[in-house]
Length: 68
Image 1 (cartoon, helix red, strand yellow):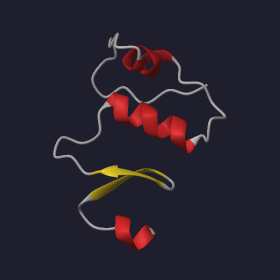
Image 2 (cartoon, rainbow, N blue to C red):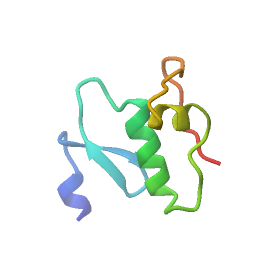
Image 3 (tube, rainbow, N blue to C red):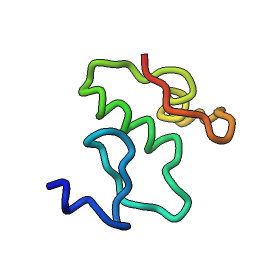
């Protein structure tokens, strides 16, 4: 399956975690969801990531996905 994800149509966000490539790059919501999926449910979305997913975006530009 990995060979299907190589190229310019998909972007690797985390190990074994890919998303469709976007011209502007991934936003905090996508990175937060990808990080949680990468954790396989063993983490909790926190900080700016949690605010983003609750629709209360307050993160500075370029803030990383946060998990606890």
